[in-house]
Length: 155
Ligand SMILES: [Zn+2]
Image 1: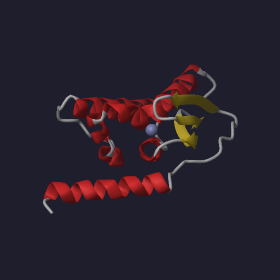
Image 2: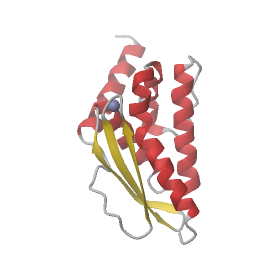
Image 3: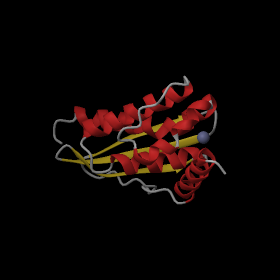
Image 4: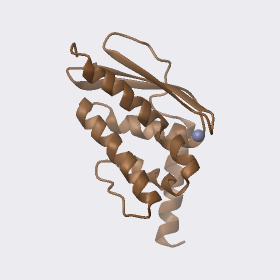
Protein backbone atom coordinates (compact mmCIF):
# COMPACT_ATOMS: atom_id res chain seq x y z
CA UNK A 1 0.00 0.00 0.00
CA UNK A 2 1.27 3.46 -0.77
CA UNK A 3 0.89 6.40 1.57
CA UNK A 4 -2.29 7.61 -0.10
CA UNK A 5 -3.96 4.19 0.26
CA UNK A 6 -2.91 3.98 3.91
CA UNK A 7 -4.43 7.36 4.74
CA UNK A 8 -7.57 6.56 2.73
CA UNK A 9 -8.03 3.36 4.75
CA UNK A 10 -7.43 5.23 8.02
CA UNK A 11 -9.95 7.89 7.00
CA UNK A 12 -12.54 5.22 6.21
CA UNK A 13 -11.94 3.57 9.60
CA UNK A 14 -12.39 6.81 11.54
CA UNK A 15 -15.50 7.67 9.52
CA UNK A 16 -17.03 4.25 10.15
CA UNK A 17 -16.34 4.55 13.90
CA UNK A 18 -18.23 7.86 13.96
CA UNK A 19 -21.06 6.46 11.80
CA UNK A 20 -21.51 3.37 14.02
CA UNK A 21 -21.40 5.24 17.32
CA UNK A 22 -22.05 8.93 16.61
CA UNK A 23 -21.09 11.40 19.32
CA UNK A 24 -23.82 13.88 20.37
CA UNK A 25 -26.64 11.70 18.99
CA UNK A 26 -29.20 12.12 21.76
CA UNK A 27 -32.91 12.83 22.10
CA UNK A 28 -33.38 16.61 22.09
CA UNK A 29 -34.29 18.12 25.45
CA UNK A 30 -35.45 21.67 24.66
CA UNK A 31 -34.15 23.23 27.85
CA UNK A 32 -33.67 26.92 28.61
CA UNK A 33 -31.11 28.76 26.44
CA UNK A 34 -31.40 25.97 23.88
CA UNK A 35 -31.93 26.69 20.18
CA UNK A 36 -33.35 24.26 17.70
CA UNK A 37 -33.41 23.72 13.93
CA UNK A 38 -34.40 20.89 11.63
CA UNK A 39 -33.29 19.89 8.11
CA UNK A 40 -34.32 17.21 5.67
CA UNK A 41 -32.34 15.90 2.71
CA UNK A 42 -35.03 14.69 0.28
CA UNK A 43 -32.62 13.03 -2.13
CA UNK A 44 -31.13 10.68 0.48
CA UNK A 45 -33.77 10.61 3.21
CA UNK A 46 -31.59 12.08 5.95
CA UNK A 47 -33.69 13.95 8.52
CA UNK A 48 -32.27 15.56 11.64
CA UNK A 49 -33.13 17.99 14.36
CA UNK A 50 -30.29 19.73 16.13
CA UNK A 51 -30.16 21.75 19.31
CA UNK A 52 -27.49 23.85 20.89
CA UNK A 53 -27.39 25.09 24.48
CA UNK A 54 -25.59 28.41 24.90
CA UNK A 55 -24.05 29.68 28.11
CA UNK A 56 -22.29 33.08 28.17
CA UNK A 57 -21.91 33.06 24.39
CA UNK A 58 -20.40 29.58 24.32
CA UNK A 59 -21.75 26.20 23.22
CA UNK A 60 -22.24 24.38 26.49
CA UNK A 61 -23.95 21.33 25.02
CA UNK A 62 -25.22 20.27 21.62
CA UNK A 63 -27.08 17.30 20.23
CA UNK A 64 -28.58 15.97 17.06
CA UNK A 65 -31.38 13.46 16.68
CA UNK A 66 -32.91 11.72 13.70
CA UNK A 67 -31.89 9.23 11.09
CA UNK A 68 -29.81 9.16 7.96
CA UNK A 69 -26.98 7.56 6.00
CA UNK A 70 -23.51 6.74 7.34
CA UNK A 71 -22.01 9.90 5.81
CA UNK A 72 -24.58 12.16 7.46
CA UNK A 73 -24.06 10.44 10.82
CA UNK A 74 -20.25 10.58 10.65
CA UNK A 75 -20.20 14.22 9.47
CA UNK A 76 -22.57 15.28 12.26
CA UNK A 77 -20.53 13.45 14.88
CA UNK A 78 -17.26 15.03 13.69
CA UNK A 79 -18.68 18.53 13.28
CA UNK A 80 -20.36 18.54 16.69
CA UNK A 81 -17.13 17.33 18.32
CA UNK A 82 -15.30 20.18 16.64
CA UNK A 83 -17.64 23.00 17.76
CA UNK A 84 -18.35 21.77 21.32
CA UNK A 85 -17.25 24.42 23.84
CA UNK A 86 -16.61 27.06 21.16
CA UNK A 87 -18.17 30.53 21.06
CA UNK A 88 -21.03 31.09 18.61
CA UNK A 89 -18.70 33.03 16.29
CA UNK A 90 -15.98 30.36 16.42
CA UNK A 91 -18.53 27.63 15.68
CA UNK A 92 -19.93 29.59 12.73
CA UNK A 93 -16.43 30.06 11.41
CA UNK A 94 -15.70 26.30 11.67
CA UNK A 95 -18.93 25.47 9.79
CA UNK A 96 -18.09 28.03 7.09
CA UNK A 97 -14.53 26.70 6.68
CA UNK A 98 -15.83 23.12 6.53
CA UNK A 99 -18.32 24.04 3.78
CA UNK A 100 -15.61 25.98 1.91
CA UNK A 101 -13.26 22.97 2.10
CA UNK A 102 -15.96 20.65 0.66
CA UNK A 103 -16.54 23.11 -2.20
CA UNK A 104 -12.77 23.42 -2.80
CA UNK A 105 -12.42 19.63 -3.10
CA UNK A 106 -15.33 19.58 -5.56
CA UNK A 107 -13.60 22.27 -7.63
CA UNK A 108 -10.31 20.34 -7.49
CA UNK A 109 -8.67 23.12 -5.48
CA UNK A 110 -6.49 22.65 -2.42
CA UNK A 111 -8.80 22.85 0.62
CA UNK A 112 -7.85 24.89 3.69
CA UNK A 113 -8.28 22.41 6.56
CA UNK A 114 -7.11 24.72 9.37
CA UNK A 115 -9.08 24.02 12.54
CA UNK A 116 -11.23 21.32 10.96
CA UNK A 117 -9.86 18.40 13.02
CA UNK A 118 -11.34 15.07 12.00
CA UNK A 119 -13.71 16.83 9.59
CA UNK A 120 -10.74 16.85 7.24
CA UNK A 121 -11.50 13.16 6.68
CA UNK A 122 -14.93 13.78 5.24
CA UNK A 123 -14.36 16.77 2.94
CA UNK A 124 -13.55 14.38 0.07
CA UNK A 125 -17.34 14.00 -0.37
CA UNK A 126 -16.87 17.18 -2.41
CA UNK A 127 -15.99 14.78 -5.25
CA UNK A 128 -19.51 13.31 -5.09
CA UNK A 129 -22.06 16.12 -5.53
CA UNK A 130 -24.98 13.85 -4.54
CA UNK A 131 -23.37 13.22 -1.14
CA UNK A 132 -22.42 16.81 -0.33
CA UNK A 133 -25.89 17.42 1.10
CA UNK A 134 -25.52 14.36 3.37
CA UNK A 135 -22.24 15.69 4.77
CA UNK A 136 -23.44 19.27 5.29
CA UNK A 137 -27.09 18.80 6.38
CA UNK A 138 -26.62 19.09 10.15
CA UNK A 139 -24.05 21.84 9.54
CA UNK A 140 -26.81 23.89 7.91
CA UNK A 141 -29.19 23.04 10.76
CA UNK A 142 -26.56 23.97 13.36
CA UNK A 143 -25.92 27.22 11.52
CA UNK A 144 -29.67 28.06 11.73
CA UNK A 145 -29.75 27.21 15.45
CA UNK A 146 -26.68 29.40 16.10
CA UNK A 147 -28.26 32.29 14.18
CA UNK A 148 -31.30 32.03 16.47
CA UNK A 149 -28.99 32.00 19.50
CA UNK A 150 -27.18 35.10 18.25
CA UNK A 151 -30.48 36.97 17.80
CA UNK A 152 -31.58 36.10 21.32
CA UNK A 153 -30.24 38.87 23.53
CA UNK A 154 -30.60 36.90 26.74
CA UNK A 155 -27.65 34.55 26.14
ZN1 LIG B 1 -27.38 10.84 3.19
